[in-house]
Length: 85
Image (cartoon, rainbow, N blue to C red):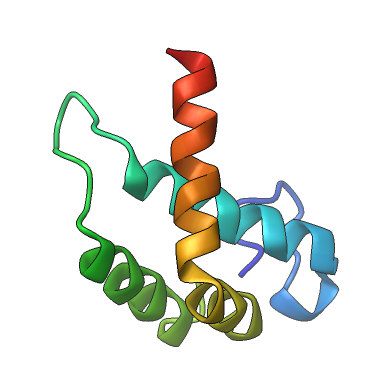
């Protein structure tokens, strides 16, 4: 939604690249175990992404693309984790 940018850009001023990276960042974080919580289940990942998109925090079209390609996105996220470990 642009609130994380120093100039408080509105969502219409954000490039598609910024929107995709925002969704990818949240998606990747939800797939990982953190010190303060376990990783999200597949169902809860989409629930959280949809919740944030309906609140205007994430781009709805990009979240829909993740939903339509969920298995591939999940496999990619897990693949990245294996490379880091």
